[in-house]
Image 1 (spheres, helix red, strand yellow):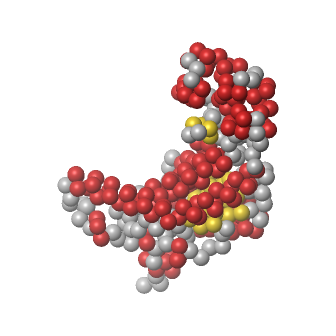
Image 2: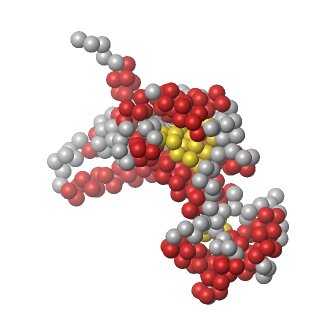
Image 3: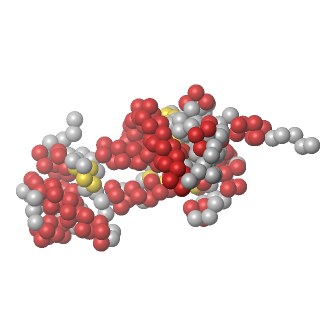
Length: 309
């Protein structure tokens, strides 16, 4: 008989790989009971993020500092974790007007893994290290490892390589903090407990991870002045929906009608933030841009003619 691999024993220690006592009869439960159980487990995932909020805030401070000093954010993951990182990165440019290289998602197996599972690609730390080298990660950047199990070799290798480079490091995992031993600047560990289907970390772990990544990127963008009140004001008008959303934001924030919002956006080069300052400060586009720059990118400061503290 061959020796049992160490990985077999390691997996048994992971919360995300254990059986869930609440769903032991899910295979024979009535449909209404199946969906109720799944929904209740999702609620557990949401609650699991609450004690991790201080660590999320620390992560945001690190990412904000990197962005202000010429750095970037790289998410690194495999499977569901990698796809969630790519998703969050891909949504930053249209939502916040950021350049595509500011937030990047690296996934084991490359772009093909977004659509077809490339499971073996995650098994080697060297693949994660090579991905960072290929992306040109520097000591100005932040690397955020994402692995529900915390042990995925691709992700561990990426984080180790980031430390060697001198980049700051974050890690999102869904196993308890007490079991986290990797050397990173900030670990975020929502302990979601056993999945409703044993080991299927696309479920509760994926839900908790999505919440955390949403907060990291969104809170960072808020800190950079890309939100006015609770509206996105640096969005890119890249499709018809975003064009109409931009007009609605201008109308909502300033009280002008549809035609005036459209005309002001046109004069502002399609930039919502500039249009808002034009209308709310009573200035032309050039003066609005100057005010925005002096105000550190914040609409409130630009309107008032003040600078951030």
